[in-house]
Length: 231
Length: 231
Image (cartoon, rainbow over all chains, first blue to last red; front, side, top):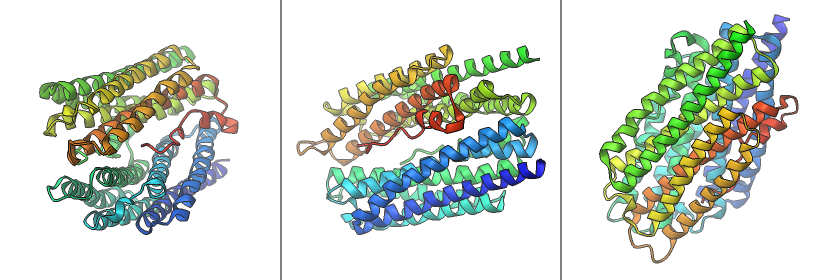
């Protein structure tokens, strides 16, 4: 009975990692669609969001079933509760990738036409995709130190967002209001995407080492990690 | 034993409603600070976020303790799981209010100086605050129909955001790039704030009527409600 329960728990964690990896691939494709003006690829990303929704629904159902049928405690309970949190983060990551893809689909002129903004958003997109892949690996390997590693990479995303706003607000910005607003929103989507990846990785730390009783683990788990002004 | 458990559950729900109401009051004050250029009030909102963090930590701890010690099933389990979700939404609402307050604190010129943008953001702020208050009431009265009611009000927030982008992108916009980007971000924060309030209210519906087994309740609970292009 407990062996079957732990097999179920392992399967849950492995599906969660798959969902986070899918969100990362969606963001990679959304960024390529944006940078190469590839409308068909953007449409594929938008369609991929249905997979994210399906995974969310089925994995949340598994979490509730495990809680109802097995009444886990201690470390097992932490796995289920942190998975419930991580599902919300992974779903938002997929949705943010969809937002970027929809800008690629519908916004003319493409906000990537500005030569100064393009390399900044390209670097942000690479880091965002990498953060998702690293969060998935952290889940698979149950690595309690991954949260700190991801937070360092996420600091670069935050710094790039501030740099992006510096470019948009400079006196020599000549591409007009609409491309500036779109670039700002894309930057903000990458930044939020990175925050969610860090929160998932920190959830792994809580899962492996967590001490719910004093609440420090929850604070350390990064749910309140976003303290800086986002631009 | 079960009476004590249900008293604990009632207390949890009542604290959650208090947390959502606090997030709404923070957004009201952040909007007043923005519109009246009130730096002291903006600083108060930023400080209030500590209360949100404290409530999140203590309520999540209660949820985990209830799951570990009482192993609830059926409706009781739904209350705890939907509270775990709602805590995440309420924490994000407080954080979004903090974002608006920080723009009021640090952005010069104040993005509210544009005469065309000001009434649109004022209306959005009123609706956002009302959505939070309505979500708190929905929790207190366990009203399963509140989700639909809030979604209607939230549609107006979404329409106002599209209207705002229309103003910012029009040929006669003359206030420059930085106020436009800031106004766009504030609009986006109100829109996300409303989405979280709707998700909380729809969680009440799931809690009262939910059928986890087929997943429809979870889909209906609005976690994927944000399907439109946000601008």
